[in-house]
Length: 75
Image (cartoon, rainbow, N blue to C red; front, side):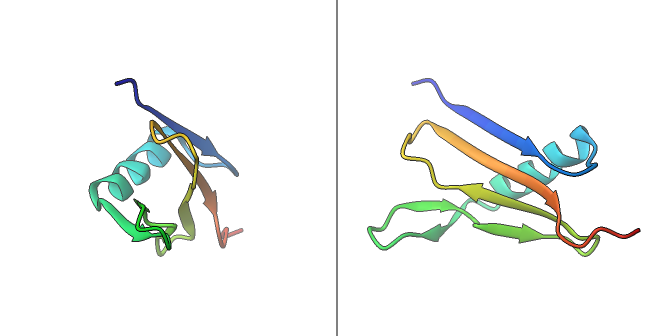
């Protein structure tokens, strides 16, 4: 079975940093659950530096999609 991971990086976030954070979320396992009992990765995970990783609920069971952004960018 073919599986895919999509990572959408927003803001000025280094690719390597974004991938490491997505790996951290994946390592935590599927912890969020919809009403029908389907489990997903955590909807939103945030770090103290303001970077956040969120998941998109896709109908395709073979694709997990993640967004990485700065929730509270320091200027």
